[in-house]
Image (cartoon, rainbow over all chains, first blue to last red; front, side, top):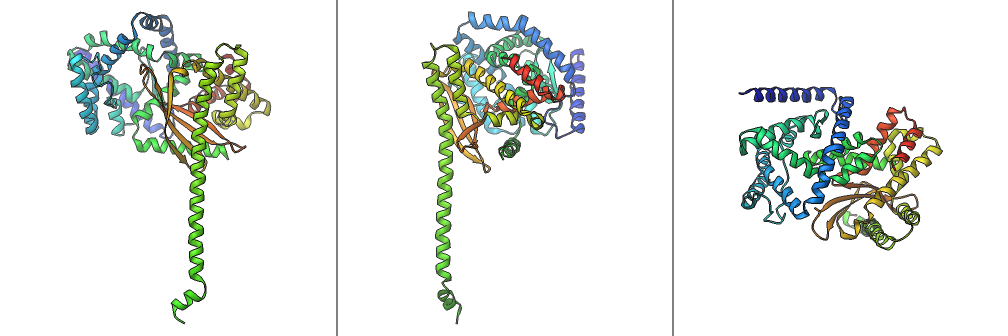
Length: 245
Length: 213
């Protein structure tokens, strides 16, 4: 195990420990954010970075690269992530999604994912290691604002590290090579795709809270089981009915 | 007297038949009322979108103040602002004065108007389709729909409208979830955090909301 792997290993262990501790604090809190003041600082650092570097690049990316080419880049980035979905669908025993994703990966492999040969007809549910951890009832853990990467739950962040390791092992064998090229493109592409949403968040009265709320709602709906989502829906219905009385 | 004679003599059979028919009619009536409610709720959402679309194309050359006024009347007709104000402030609502409540409602309304104005021009190239309507509990109705881009450039977006009768017995929209992100929940997170940090001071919240125009 080289030095990098040691650091990564201990980092992961500490993240899991944070997760475990957070579960002992409370299980009923809807948003667990014990590091709010630190997270806010990271959020404003990311926002500054976005204002000065990422947003201007993403704007010029949108202006100078034709829409079709941008769609191809997006399609290629999605195709690059399909092996992670295959692995995690298998770990989650989701046979249908594993088969569909494998078929899509092989088919679009003919164009390296730059052109979607099945015209988005195959609906693949994206799975990451964070969702696998959720499936096996690992608690969500505290909310984190990660420099450069944005909002994550501790569980998703642990999963993200594992996914990145898998991803680079499959393609180049070195984390640095693939991440140095793929991550910046991914960030610029996502920024351009989500420009309306991100701009509306920055315009709100408390952008940090808005970002956290958007992220957690979206993440939970994708990661939670149908049963848990239904339970949350019923809770919301009850709250609405009470207000309607 | 055997049991059969007793049954015939005391009109028990007739009573049973009458009760059965009454129950059947009652069931049919309630089903009809429910189906009617679902249809009306679905129409509310579809009417709002079609009126907004017409508004977007017909008022493009109008004075911005008149345009805003028209959007305002559209929102007041279809969206339950009173409910939204209560839902987004949680337990702090009861502590606010009547004047603060009114100011908050108008600040919230202005925020919705601003959001709609930004996205109004994009409506002309989109189509909305209702997928499913379902009653939830005793008062709520869920309407699930999808917005699709006519040019197929943008991915389709899933919507969930929560609709209920207001005090005047008209269907109005209470909340909208766009790809599982609820407008009420995200707005509530923002307002309650602001109120908590300012010890429930509504005036600061209203000031902040008005500033974020």
